[in-house]
Amino acid sequence: MEKWVVAAKRANFGEIAEKFGIDQVTARLIRNRDIIGDAAIEEYLNGSLLNLHSPYLMKGIKKAVELLTEKIDGQKKIRVIGDYDIDGVMATYLLLRVLWRLGANADYDLPDRIRDGYGLNNNLVDLAYDEGVDTILTCDNGISALEQIEYARSLGMTVIVTDHHELRQAEEGGEKKAVIPRADVVINPHQPDCPYPYKNLCGAAVAYKLGCALYEAMGISSEESEALIEFAAFATVGDVMDLTGENRILVKEGLLQLNQTENPGLRALIRVNHLEGREITSYHIGYVLGPCLNAGGRLDTAKKSLELLLAQSEAEATELAEELLELNIKRKAMTLEGYRQAVQMIEESSMKQDKVLVVYLPNCHESLAGIIAGRLRERYYRPVIVLTDGEQSVKGSGRSIESYSMFEELQKCAKLFLNFGGHPMAAGCSLKKENVEELRRRLNEQTTLSREDLTEKVVIDVPMPINYITEQLVGELSYLEPFGKGNPKPVFAEKDVKLLEVRVVGRERKVVRLRIKNIAGTVMDAVYFGDPEEFRSYLEQKFGAVETEKLYQGRENAVKLSVVYYPSVSEYGGTRSLQITVQRFQ
Image (cartoon, rainbow, N blue to C red; front, top):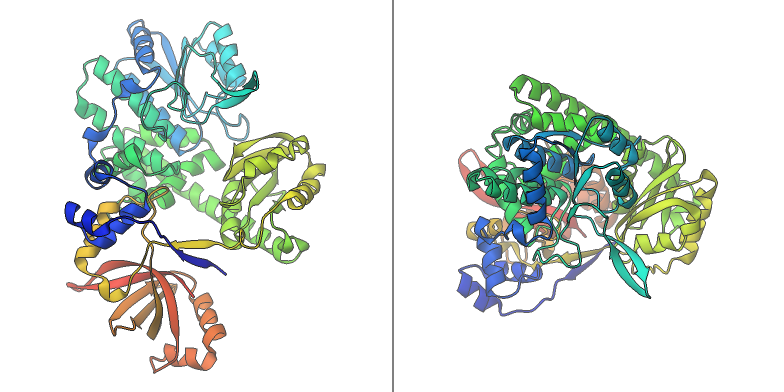
């Protein structure tokens, strides 16, 4: 059972509403996102490219521009080495596009997820050296590649690191200090002495900043720099970065560009996903387009995703987009199969009593472990680690809940692992097969998770009766977009809503349409996109089969629900009407 709680952050909502010409509900939503003070509210509501910080504030960019300018002028061979996810692919594309525009002798390489693992490795360094590469330019990786960078430099290569990941820590004189690789230049806003004001950029956004600085140094117009934003925005959403501050501006602007993109690859990807002519939002990046790009790195090679972005002709772009779409369809089917196996395993064993779920699926593709762990966490609201058979060991990926720092808990079992890493909400590990059951036992024995910790909390922004909804308020909610991590879609709720009518509609009969009435007597349409059978089953359990049947027949009944919802305006046959989308119910 979920626990619904109301956000109780205080402010003078009337004053904010009057000052910025918004509804008090909108003012409250802004405060709930910790946007405090006139300057921050102004930027949140009206932030533009003018609010972006100068790239030269980022430590290392000035030196990197000088070095790269020298390499470009001397036609030295530069190799961009990215990573196999959306962020790494977009960052690689961005840097290549900038370098080629400036006449550089540049190419790229991307690691293979299974053969190479994450980021820079000695094989990629050797290959670069053998092919006469003078300079390695990393993106979305490199900050942890201490030994590999030393190795590359020992071979006489120049190494420039652009990354956004947290730095490794080491104890020195009883204090923890950041460990920075001995590259020729390191660009990463997380460096302790980097004065860049906004730290939460993704790898492609850091690459974008370097690109802007290079264009400026070479006299390329700012319009060309701005044309790169859609790629940084795509990566920001795809890498699930916080949509706050500078990220929010990048994504807001990038979505405008993406909706009229000139990139043949992105146009083709939009087309094969049947999104042509529709407004592309952060949702489409996160759940439709982004997974197609990620599918390349998961089931084939990330180079296919990069080739899509680099495609020059519509025919080539369409072929690659269709291949990636097929890979994503295959990935979804494999994920669903793995998820179903995991649920069956949990439900039919003592694992169901565990507070920390450790699920061993030997035949699951290792690139899918994290996705399956995330889905299991949503179902059971517990920390989950999904383990699979890798080439040389068992590999795992974990997803956690707010009250459980997965990385800290794994550290307590460090002796069981061949390797592990991560942060509070997600982690990865490898271990010997004989240690799998011991890991499950140890994690559950040492956990202090309580029943309350394992009860999911749904934070309601505003308890709001549906009679308060107006077209103007719905329009104002768009000021808060784009939604995503760090800037969640607002959550509204109302108690004791009477259900007047229920219909299951749609070609596959997977949509529940409702007619509802609240205590004030306001009648409104509602829609629910969850499982129609589970919805009916819940009503029968709570109100009985007789009352539920009356409801489905459109007769007077005793069915009332408390609902969590989001309001919108529905247009049908030239008529506009208010409706809500029901997200949760009790």
